[in-house]
Image: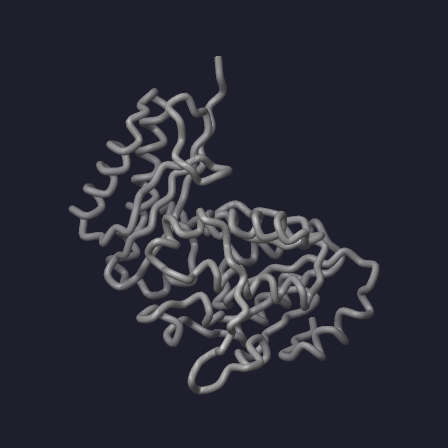
Length: 287
């Protein structure tokens, strides 16, 4: 497995792979079993698997955890080598943002995500998805993969990436990996490392509320706002700081109709100082 840190070395490593099917798995590092499942998914579709490890400052807002975000490159590379990854691209900030200095990134050219990016997580993290779309566009340009693998846990992000590829005519297939979960139901996340032991025990409540909504929809309930409000109220009473619980169309992220047969339930909330997100897809068959 090769590990490269600059664009010149990346291109030198990829040039001999011309004609092979290359898959990219973008990550911010601190890898867990969920990331490795995405790697295996990429491995099953491609001849060459490239994993990027880059904590992207452009997608962090003021007061967010950019400085504290765990960086474990050596451990990550050991896991990736065992998983059969061919190439790790772990660039510096200055490599990805060539005009960056101590005063800021000075990245004035940004990719504007679609309007739905301003909802849900976007409403609580202004500029986040522009940062995601910009860095992913850079990675696509640098790696030039035939496919890229993203996890469904960041469902809104996945929809932004689909729109990015579609509207900017990238010749890249987006492969979505299912959310990996702990035995408790908690979605695997690098930020789970911030949770205390007590919070780790409580954290599955977020997914539990999404499951409760799914059960209500299966039972025929269509009072979407009431279901969302009830879930928020229950989480708040258990000590969560809720950003949102939402029931949406799984393709457009618009509000579902009362005659809808497919939904995605999404939630974001803080437990202590740790912000967790989760989602649950649901579809019913017509009689």
